[in-house]
Image (tube, rainbow, N blue to C red; front, side, top):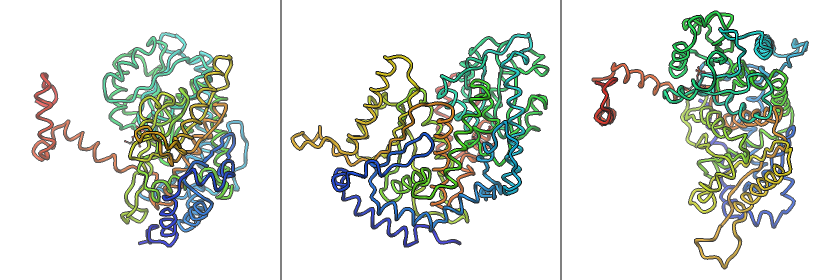
Length: 538
Ligand code: F6P
């Protein structure tokens, strides 16, 4: 078994260094080195990441880079991007970067690329061409519903990675909805209420349902698909009312979806990394082919940066290492993501799955239990709303929560919009300053005083558009990879969610009745008593 990263001298050096940093206030770090504002900054594409308010010095960064070298970060990056089977528990590659490697209008020669990457990129491109043709045909009204109406509304049925990415990006790009499908709804939950919202999204005859499920066995998605089939015209198989996006076409076929209505994804794409695959069909249907391609171009530019730029200037490497620093050495158990943008209101939900499903692991790649922390709890909300709910804890609570402020405005058109955007920016800067430096006024009563010394980064992009959104997504994806590589874990499986699914199934089907644990038995009894109707558990 390989040595745990925590047993290395590089780890010990960081622990010793953290003990010193914990005694140092951010105010003093800035007093001793005012130029850190501006120096502790990385740039990738249109994104500027200002990490000067993180509790780090030059020595911290040097030590983190040494840790990265010790952990074999560069090798892990290359292995992942080249398509080696880095998802060892499932013996698969994690080739989400191949999805966006080739632009739609390319005739790029891929023969110089490693085999798995070249093949995956060509396969992905071929399917994207199919997807683009479909989108254009729907947009132009060539493909219509069963009563010959043009599609006007889209309902995406899917959950987890088949939901959070498309939903987040659809809302983020609200000003880029240029196709005739002017409105989309995202239906995910097993709760009937979610379906109830979706079914009234639009006039049924002009609604296109995109059922997105990599496995096509996910109970939530199948339950919602069953509702769709109940509701729509009996003749639906002969029309494009329901299309499926899946890596398991044979499963989709079991639900009556004709082969020509199925778009393919592959087992080498993780659900939470799949927005650039056909799982992005709902998004492409609403923003159009060009805007979608532009998002992929944004992702690609960050992939190139990640693969080629030296670690000390590499935005994803530095971002990932800072996350490790805060989690393992400063001991902060959570991280908040606060987009000051209504358009990015679903970003925290999306990042929760990306980070916590990827790196919420307790064993290394060779199965050794870790003796250090892995993924923090990622949470967040939209500013300034969040200032009026949980920022009190951020400023004065007993837990220190590192924050990612996302400053991402759309291009303002009107003067009042501009004024409100100015106010949003002022609030981000005020919050970051208050967290870092506190109130700095000794005359204040203790209950009013803000001690400060609370870290944050500001990720800013002025114009939120498909390209810059793609950049932001890829940046976070790669930061996840970096953290997983340092922790020596597999960021691409998710076995933790399986057991609960089986248990729910067994409880529902009563196959576990006699073996139920006492707590479950009791809870079941309580709920049964509360429920007058005993439909399920009589
Ligand atoms: O339960 C977790 C999970 O497997 C996620 O990893 C995935 O994104 C989600 O379920 C949905 O899976 P599918 O796309 O196969 O329906």
